[in-house]
Length: 499
Image 1 (cartoon, rainbow, N blue to C red):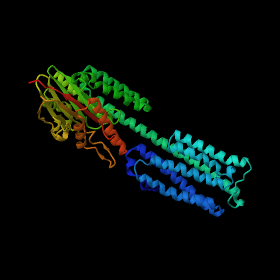
Image 2 (image 1 turned 120 degrees about the vertical axis):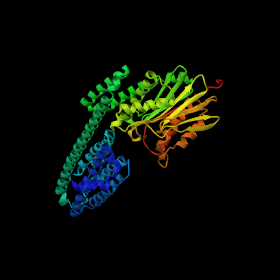
Image 3 (image 1 turned 180 degrees about the vertical axis):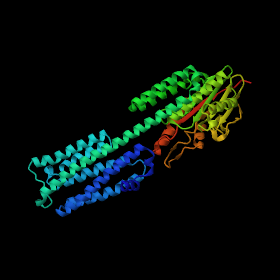
Image 4 (image 1 turned 45 degrees about the vertical axis):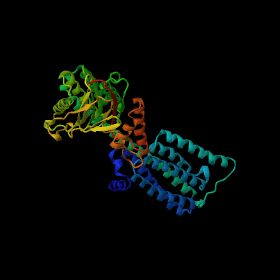
């Protein structure tokens, strides 16, 4: 076992070890190669004894090739390529051996069945069907000429036919057994991964349900949501195959907590867009909007983490904002941040050191009767454009929540003159921090500013298309996956004529 682990460390890049699924797939492919290497070199020796030149060279080349090829696993995202190489080379080698050992009636012919079996193990059902069809065509390719009278020569000492056939068939049976063994091992590992994931999700759900006990009485809506979460916890415990459907349901709940776009649309008169792209179905980014008697409040936030943990942090943030604005009657930008920090700090019991989670938040208060807006930010800046000039308002360098910065926080307020038509852009850092491009680098804040300055005069529906296609093409060009939740909001405020 220690030797096998040493071999795995030699071939497999550590990047595959970060995910148990990738580790299992990489190990499965590598073990398949190693099994064939053992058989290849064994048959090289046998071919030498029986003077089977074609078999000697084919198995020798195949053995060395299969020793070298798995080094591709030193590079990331190459499991599929290595599996396809295995299918192609093994099938070609088998066909050559059949050709030089008597054709269709060779004892090597049953080895054709191994290719679709391995395709099913290493790739998927679609690939397995493809290789099944190919192998059937190969059988007919040998059968038709033999039916018409053609005889394939046996290119080794015929005195060894019976031992050769016995060894070939024995090897075939042993390989099928090893394939089944590999399959069972991979299946058991996959089941353990699923069970561990379910256990982690169950523990996370239990922790969240416990931490939200105090909030349960504050809003009747939250009571319904928590009941749904408990129902999903029970469902996950009983049916681990429905994990993804549970997360999809959580996404619908999270979307229900976000402001209704119709309300925002009515306020900004269609001059706005929201680009919201969660990384893992549910998001740790959120936005919040409310129209009060003489002002409107727009909040964008980036919570710690993403996926399920980030989504529940965002729910906590939305609940806190509702409490601060509607129950406490606070609508000044800096005061909203101060109270939101106290709310998160208390809710997560951070004074006792039980959590270091937090969120980066920007708050913009736009007044209706006077041409000014207030901005306050916690690690989350905001941009606005006036007279073709882009200005960045820097946020305070301290997040909402997180016990690393102490309990007491006071956030500053900045005043913006909006007597001129003003276009604002706010969101999370997911857009600018996305990796991509030919060099695989971050998109960067400067490129985000450049697009905003070039496109701010365009209709906002067009702007959303441009921002969306730009970041998607950036990821595609670099063959990168989305690394974080992405939230970007743009809107126009025109208070021209208001003194």
